[in-house]
Amino acid sequence: MQILQLTESMLTPFVGGQLEIMDHKNFCAYCGEIESVRIIRDFLVVKFAWCASNDDNGNQQGLGTNWTSINKLTYSWMLPEGIISKEYGGRITVGFGMRLVELLIFLPKECGPSYEEYRLNRSQVKGLDAVP
Image (cartoon, rainbow, N blue to C red; front, side, top):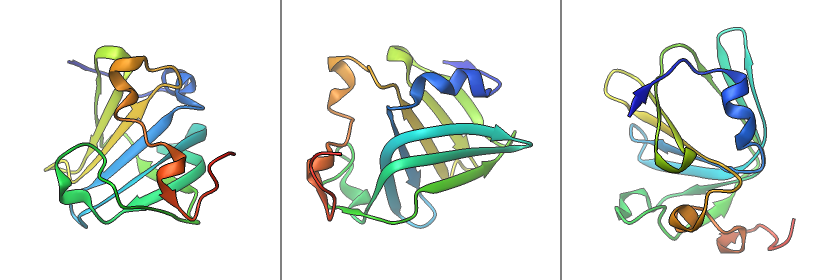
């Protein structure tokens, strides 16, 4: 694991991929397809093409199964508070908070078969059409 400085050019390859947000403080998870990602001043800003929330976060087996479409499509985090690591398969993980209460996992658009099980299939999301 490498500790890195997060840059916009580092995140550009994730457009069209997915971002999983684990919020351990509120015991929930979000996941969606990344439409755009920017660093504006000291903030990481991610806009989703679609996004879903999961109240099944305690599942411990990947993303869980109870996904529902949500209308909030833009999220932001203050930088450089995150602990950033680049991992096998091109995945980037960013942890926020002293006890890593919020964890972001960026999956590239082309993540290979070893990461397909981590991607959320939009057909599994209630209230979201199966085809974009």
